[in-house]
Length: 328
Image (cartoon, rainbow, N blue to C red; front, side, top):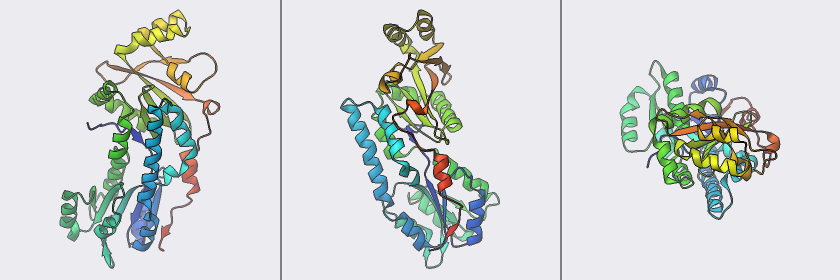
């Protein structure tokens, strides 16, 4: 089952390889500052950076698989994800996309990309006019994910649009893994086109990183400044059950009735899994999608409420320094 909405999303490195320094300088200036970018003018430096990148991806995947396995053994996923975010800042350094020029002295971009073997990221080929048929054949054979003609008059817009789409696309293996954390009914709700589109728009507007969880059902997200949000999802068919649960833990009559009527949602499972102090919080319910099957409510988790402090993506980017061409 293919999900339009990625179930697991985070930033990652974008590596450019081109033997034209002026072109790399231009890329370093036009690519948004909110993206992690590395510039390489020689295949040797690029290859050194990508050395063992596959193993790093696999190690990170194993970490995520272990979280889901522990969930099956009764350990809630939500605090595990928060701990993973707090203790694994290196996840932001994983290379998500490589953009490689086709025509280079002594080699070509397809040979460079082929040497990456099982690395699971996205591959983009930059081509000259004479190379376009080569790129079309490579795309049709699944050797690259996209190609961008360098001679196109709107090359910058085309390239940035391509990279943005790739950055928001679902990663097949990670999507398959995190699907197992959802119930079949939850999967079906997320397949509703208007629901998927609404959630995609929400995530792009608010977060740089998120994961979709099943128990509780919702999205755990991080802003670029490190603020943690919980977007609770509630099927309208389950409002009565949620209201009964709210009543059983002592929430007031007016709030319970508001929950049953779909006006508010209470973060009962969030409160329990994080052992939050004080009364269970509630927030206004908003419709997700246009078919009336799903509601959401947003909750901000204060730093004091998190098991550990989570580093901000903004700080990770700042630590990378200025964008300079690596020619080693």
